[in-house]
Length: 379
Ligand code: CAA
Image 1 (cartoon, protein in one colour):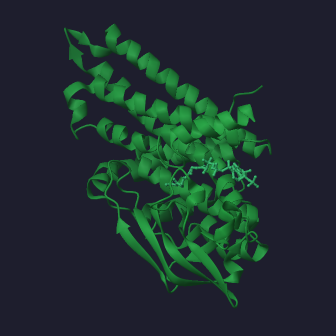
Image 2 (spheres, rainbow, N blue to C red):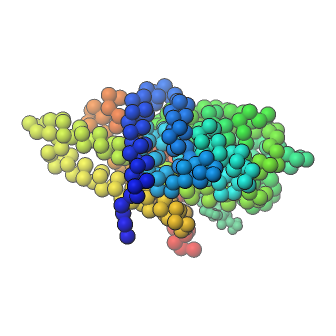
Image 3 (cartoon, rainbow, N blue to C red):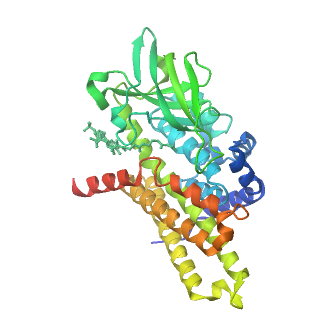
C-alpha cells in the first residue's frame, strides 16, 4: 500500500493551488456577496486543462486520473466552493455520462468542447416533485419523426444559464416508470428550451442554480445518450462518481476553514497567550484536522478505485456522507474558534460554514447516502 501521490498528482495540486490562491480566492467574497458567476475563471481553468482532467487527450482532455480530478476540486473549494462545484458538475455530471455512454460522434461534438473548456456542462435530473425519489420524474420525451419532443422542467440545476451542454433525463415511456427513462444531450439555444427562476441561496452563491424548462423542445435523435430506457441507470451511475466530486468539495471547504482557524489561533491572544495555546481551542483544532484527513482518505480512495476500474459506488456514497457531515462540523467549529469575528464577513469562515451545508444535501442528501450504503451492504 502506498499513500504517496504521484508526481503528476502533486504537480496538479501545486498548479491548482497557485491558480486558486492567485485568481480565485481574492474575488471569492465579492462574488459570493453579489451572487456573481465569473466565466473568465472557468475560461482560465480551460486554458490550464482543468476542465478535461480525466478525459483522454484524443477527446481534448489531459488524460490524468480521478485522484487528480478530486485534488483539483478540493484545491478550488479550499478558497471558493462555488468554483469547486462548477468544475465538479462540469466533469462528473456532464462530461462523465457522455464519455461513458456517448457515441464517438457525440464525444467529438460534446465531450471535446467540454474538455477543452470551450463549453460549460450541466446535469438535469431533479424536478419540483422528485428530489430524493429521482424515479418519480414527470418530464416526458415523445418521439416525433427524427426528433424527441421534451416537455417538463427541472429545478436546482447547477451551472444552468451559463452552461451550453445539458445532460437531462426524461420519460420516453412514462408507463414503465424508471425503466422508461432516457438520457438526452440538450444544447443552449434549442427552441423550446429556456431558463426559469434563479435561486438565491444560503451558500455557494456565485455558482448559478436555475430551473430549466422544456416546452415542446425538439431534440434530434442523434442527441439521445445511450439507449432508450437506459436513462435511470445512466443517471445513477453518473451520481456514483459525482458524489465523490462533492466529497472533494467538502474536503476543500473544511481544509480552508481549518487553515484559517490555525492561523487565527496562533495570532489571537486572550488571557495573555494565543488562544491556540489553550486546550479548549487546541483540542478543537486537533479534532477538526482529524476529520479533514479522514474525509480526504475516503475521497482519494474512492477516486483511486474508479481509476483502477474497481467498484466505487458505495465508497463514493461513504466519502460524500462522511466528508459532507465533517465539513459542516469543521466549519461550525471554525466559526467558534473565531468567536464574534467569525460571525462577521470580515473573515471567510462564515462563508465556509454556509457553503458546507449544501454538501450534505445535493447529489443525494446524506440520508440517501446512508440508504445507498446500507442497500449495498445488506443486499
Ligand atoms: N448504478 C447502476 N444502476 C443503479 C444504481 C447505480 N448506482 N442505482 C440504482 N440502479 C438501478 C437498479 O439496479 C434498478 O435497476 P432495475 O430496475 O433494472 O432492477 C433501478 O436502478 C432502480 O433502482 P432502485 O429500485 O434502487 O431505485 P429507487 O427508485 O429506490 O431509488 C435511490 C434509488 C438511490 C434513492 C435514487 O433515487 C437516488 O439516488 N436518489 C437521490 C437522487 C439524487 O442523488 N439526486 C441528485 C441530483 S443532481 C445534483 O444534486 C447535482 C448538483 O446540484 C450539483
